[in-house]
Length: 300
Length: 256
View 1 (cartoon, chains in turn purple, cyan):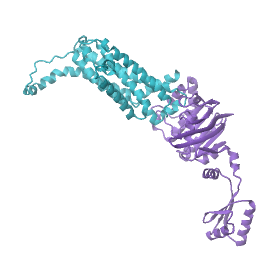
View 2 (cartoon, one colour):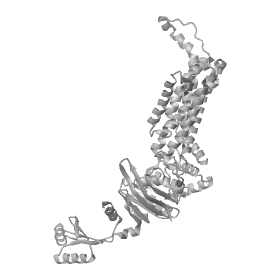
View 3 (tube, one colour):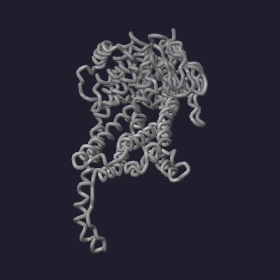
View 4 (tube, rainbow over the protein chains, first blue to last red):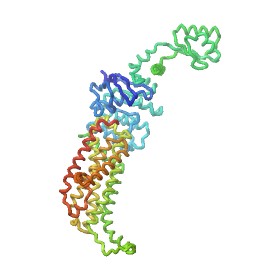
């Protein structure tokens, strides 16, 4: 079952069409990576899902209920973490979570139990100061705690790791891995290593459309073309190889060449290297990476 | 209802912890003390100035002060209190738009009208508290020094002014929906109050404008009765309800 289904939504700001028909479905219990360049329309899409932004056409369903702009009932299924979460700075984390619990209509004892659990999960269990003095990472972690408070079906996070240092990023990703069992996570990002670490599904948004979508493993396999990298010691050898195999190779640096073809070409190249007695630093088969896929998709 | 109550509690906590309550209490206490103090000091100041006034050819024999002098001061000073109130409270919505704190609250499913209602209730209570605090202090001193019974229609006159303040607060709510920043709210609120005042200068519509609720002298002296203000009171109450009611659909479609 899909917890979120977006069908052909369009959104225009002035004369700029940001979303040109985005369709997307997020299966339950997935960690869904929503990838795109800065300004691709990721935040716009997420805000539309939350009913914070009106769309020009199309339809959004959260847990099979339609999202309406302005006041939407579907938000009860969603926990949301904005890119820079802002809290009432005069409250302490537990006061803030109590307030959040009360506005969602949770029972007092549930609020207490969940708050304690979540503050522990995000590592703010011992923090009794007011939010005013919190670092960005701490705010981000509190943001996750408030988003998970009422055990939402869908957790939407807008670039949760973009502004954090490597330690902060790792902490957030670990929290996501721990939260995966309870909920479905949709998060937008442009950091591909984060996606490779925790996502089960991905979609790439480019030019206002979804360019690729599916399970991460399938998407990796989409790139069937094998690539080999040959690194030589002397740059004049690069020229020799290039002149012999000009149709199938390209130079990426004075000492490195990449071949994009079949395995038999590699043997030909190795034969050529042996015959010419070129000194080689390494020959390597390149794994299809998300990055190369991403680059390919957005270059289209 | 629980959500609304939680938001009211949050607003109250904000009023206290941000120091808003403290500042307003100090302002209104000072104003409350100033009214009888100025009345009490008037003869002294006139005496000090007698010589210079005599040089200008003015002869002052005796200055008479009573509770009426102090109440006149009260209605002269209370606009300062209202202006302070508007300046301090006008950012209650815009601060939340700009910092983005409201986004998290609304995405938790709190209905937007509850935000409008909760903030309106807190501002109403705060205004009521500050206004009657100032009134109470002036009343107490006046009763001690003089006799409050010289002022006719004292309570109803004060109620009129309180209602005028309330209308100004509902304007803050309305303009907080229409504007994105604090300047917009202040300009809208101030502009509307000035417009109401200008309209009240036309004799034909005068009796319908909220601005006439600020005319207190003839009520206090007993020259007019409260019934004269019936239409203005009714119009003001309707405008208050309309401002808040109109705010809700605007809030529902407001992009945050």
